[in-house]
Image (cartoon, rainbow, N blue to C red; front, side, top):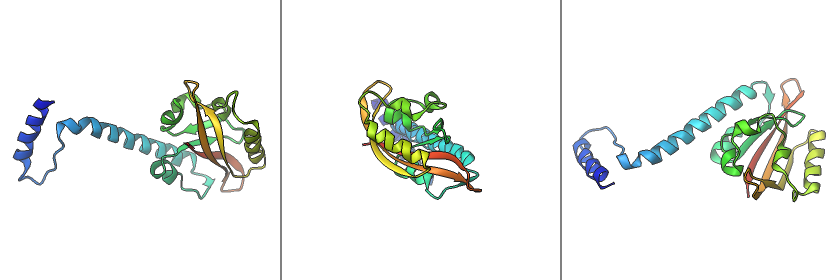
Length: 170
């Protein structure tokens, strides 16, 4: 790393009089991780915008995902996952492609509270919003408490088309 510092110092002195900003070489890894995160959020927002074209939904899913760092999961009315944001991997170890087409029940296990899942099931059946904390299981089978805010999503003509959930590990 000393070689990079020397180079960074030489280049910093060279560009001091220039209006261009420089980025030291030893910060490229940080920049790369940040840039990848920004690209992932952009891709997530693009996908959600395609899904939500005909939604009559007022919650700000971009704020929930980008600012509040929540995982966003969208399902069909029959609870088949059609979308999961990239940050689901950080929460439970699954990448979005592994959960698409499956039920959110895939995150439940032996110690998941049946009363809580019944409460969610009732809200879904009645097309009502819900907020719960539930014991879920990660891909490696370890447990975590998942705080979920779920909302029915209706089309512009009033038909139930999706459910959206904002989730975070507590």
